[in-house]
Image 1 (tube, rainbow, N blue to C red):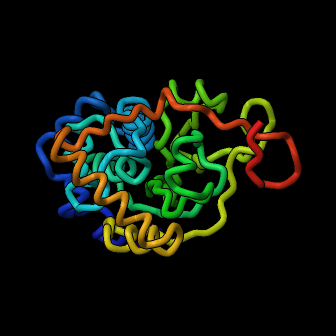
Image 2 (image 1 turned 180 degrees about the vertical axis):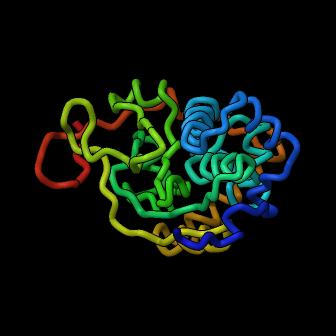
Length: 247
């Protein structure tokens, strides 16, 4: 049996699995289940569909990723949702850790691609659970309603096989490509994420995002006025490469 790093069961300031709200939500979600695989599946779907995917929420400070805050706000982008899922896993006594990867051809809209200036999404976040003596990937980023709108099958998770983004959508058009892995961690380093954004998108662009988030926080208490679910879906031609070609 693999020796388990205790950090994957312990709370952190960001992955605050000991927070009363996290513990209560975990208990409510698993509904008395004792089987670790069943518990992992239940909390996965609770985060996938219970937390709205929002790529425009502020995400430059540790509190923006804190699991209890994500649960309270009911929204967040992939790393935020992974933080919550990781915390729920630890609250259920399932060893849980955060993984990061760069992905291309992400579930995107015209507006989001214009904001990034790229179709490369760096430091996409997911979770790994230690179940039945092995690590299993779980990707809770996109809720079912959002996937339906983008004509992509919602990612399922059975606790025994990796749940990772599909290469094609339901029309067999290119959808996602994993281009780099950044490893797995016991906690989330916001400094690492921001540094990765600056390297990929340029420091000026990233500082502009942060300035916009600060202004938004002052006016809207951190809630974005943009609705990703209603933005213009980008179409992709059916071809053999991963170059983005709007229809």
